[in-house]
Length: 291
Image (cartoon, rainbow, N blue to C red; front, side, top):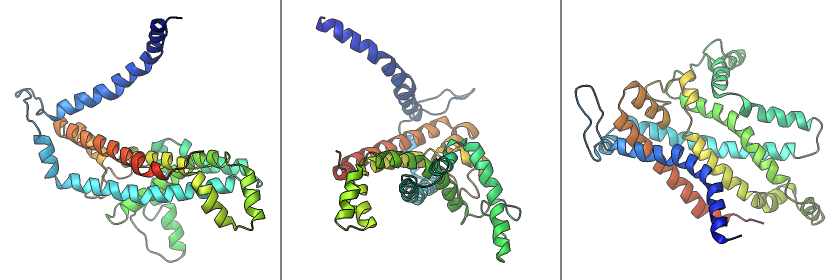
C-alpha cells in the first residue's frame, strides 16, 4: 500500500475526533476570548472593542477575589482528604473480606447518584433543627446550627459533601492500581519482617504514584467544576461565602447578562486549570515511577 493511501486513511480515522475537539473545545474557547475583548451588545448600543477592560475589571472586583479564595480553600480541603480516604477504602476492599462486593458497591454508590440528588440528600442532613445532623447532635445536648446559613460553616459543609461524593470515585482507580501490584512483593515483604505500614509506604504507595497523579489532576479540575450543588444548597450565599468561580461565571452571564465579563472570567479559569495541570505534569511526574 502506498504511503499516500496510508496517510489518507490515517487522516480519515483522525478526522472525527479532531472535528469534535475543534467544535466543542477550541472553537468555544476562541469565541469566548473574543467576547471578552468586546463590550456587551444591546438594542441601543452595538458592541465595541474594549481590549482588556474586562480583565482590568476582574482585578478590581472584590467578589472575584472572594470566590477565587473560596475555590482554593475548597480544593485544599477536599483533594487531600478525598485521596487519603480513597486509598484507605481501596486498601480495605482489596482484601479478601466477607461482603467485599457489597462494600465496594457501598463506597461507589455516592458517585453514581446525580449531582442534584446528592445536594437534596445533604440538604436534608444540614437542615437546621429538623436535619439529621442537628437531630443527632441534639441527643448530646448541642444547640441547633444553621450549617448552610452561616458564613463560617457553609463552605466546610460543602467540602464534606464533596469528599463524600468523590472519595468513592477515586477509590476505583486506586483499587485498579492495587490489583496490578504483584502479590509476590507482599510475600517478600512479610519474609523480610516488614510491617504493614512499611509495605504500604515503601512499596504500594510509590507504585500507586501514577494513579495519584491522575487522581490529583482530576480532583483539582473537579473542585473548579462544582456548580450543581450550589444551585440546590446555597446559591453562593450567604454573602458569597460559598460562591465559587464557575457559579459566579454562571451568575454573571445569565443572571446579570454581562457576557463580556463572564467571558473574561472563563478565560481566567481555563488558564488557571491549564497551568495547574501543566505544573503537575512537569513537577510531580518527575517523582512518579512507571513500571
